[in-house]
View (tube, one colour):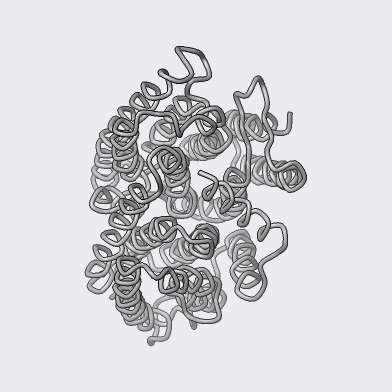
Length: 491
């Protein structure tokens, strides 16, 4: 029942927002709906802590530790995005960039986007999961092109075309998986239920499963932003409203990676872990390497953050590919850390845009003097996202890198060494680009002061998670991460 309530909440919120004509009411409906979903997920989390797995509606829904980590990310970032949207979109409305009517549809699309991401996580059937991932594309295309200017429309077209091609390739992976399962389970309704497939995956036809995983990795990897299928991501993330950019980078790419991990577990049980782990490591390292030159020479701060997402999703894929206890634990912890930190940075980016009316880094100086709270949080976020000790991302990166060296596998050790070099270059690029923005001399014509209490509240909410996990991983999260490793290992 709690799973159904979790799914229904964003739908009701979306409908209520679209029928409410005043922003002063719709923003509170949006915040309340997101908060209720967060509360439901906390309750669901404690149930998983007790029972390990939950199934409902004749096994249509399936929830385990891997599900819970992703729904945690969805609900936390969604609540922060709803809170941030209340201030950010009000400023956009005040500047006449959008109308009241358009704002109604913004909230409707945002909460339908949240619904599709939650559905991806809790659904048991891999075919319906594919539909839900495609649903995230449909819900967000209009958000990418929300402002209806040429660059926004181009980004929206690029996004929907590339992601649709990717999701079509993933469909071949779903079909091949079903064909493999059909020989064992027969032509029955639950032949694509992940909980049933996992139990018999060792009996699947290995060549078909290898091909299926390759299609899934390329298909869902396109949506996750893995290179070289990442080209839509910088445009979409930079052109969407900042709260949606936060949901893109913090949540959407993780939902796609969630789908890849589900198939990785099936493939590992069928043919052994070496095949899928190697592919994850290769695509992961390519993603990290590809992001470096774009970060080093970047002039647009939202595109800088977008290319950083390409790097971090590659790092997560590498951690899963390494396959050790600490690397899988670290990769999943990194998933959470990156989600809250990158979303926080996109909120900072939104505040910069509202104040300076530009995304060009050359035109922004002295943020910490003009926007004291935003500037301080931005400085913390930059050090956190680059893995500077003692911040949260350093903790998860250290676990993955240490396990890479500890593996004793020459191939893995070489990848780890290259990864350290890449991370160092990215650190240099970020600090060089952001230092001048944060600590330079501000232009005299830029008024001082923060834009909205709502935006600051949203940023402080996410900053809490960034700081707390820098020094302490709560027992509930530790248990979830250990259970995820057990799920992956028992493949």
